[in-house]
Length: 376
Image (tube, rainbow, N blue to C red; front, side):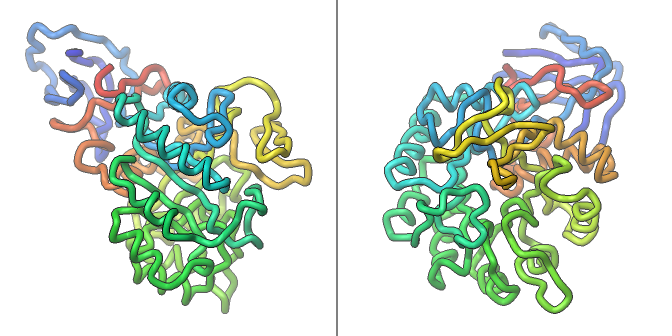
């Protein structure tokens, strides 16, 4: 498809351009056209003055469109999930498999591998969240599935044909050298559902720990003489932190402090989305337990948060309205920074010549008007 998108404010990833146009063809951005530049013969699409930004990238998506990835695995399920999240501006995502049995883990990898070969729009890779977690901080994960990491899992994670692979584990629950082995194989290892000490996290960072999954959630709080995993995450300048900016998982003031403390460019918006995002109904099932969806929260009957009802467009709005961040920074947290975390910053997360035409159009209230994935 070839188009010229005009009459929009264009956020390049760094600045908002007024009066410019965007020319894309064959899935790529070919050129940004300055005001008054002749547009040639390509079809011209008037965007009505709305904001055109790089498409959102979500590194933690448990489900959407009424489907939980671990319960329904295959091309059809992945298509429904990706389509549901595209509605909210996500042009790239990692389906996330929470702690489960080995057979389901293998099936998830097989499904993602097959979907990659078929070119499923919006699918980037795979996130294994568990089951190598600290059982004392399992959150809504099924404690019966938490176990020790073995060589078969290490080989599965290192598969070269899955796209970017993220593995969330508790560093204190795996042998020394494990994180280095995974990192050397190209896996992005994140600490999560963990009670690791500051020193244990420092050792994990030395082995190549890439980031932290839903910072503050399912981990002990930082205190004055025990900085723990949260303190280590905020003090480290190179690792990435995912945050769930839904106003429920973490108090807004806490996230504001974290944003002020952490190196700019290392905080990512994630949704931790459940089937309710883009789906219907007020409940769903998770490992045999009922999760109720009410007032924007997904909770087990004991009140434990079980993922979220958040979408990326809402996360961007909340980052502006609740966390008092500039619009440009909120958009970078949803696109440029996740792309960098996944090693995709060479062709995603910006609007520039040579980058993929993965785009989202937002109105003045940051509601999604339209998306493009590979220009379509």
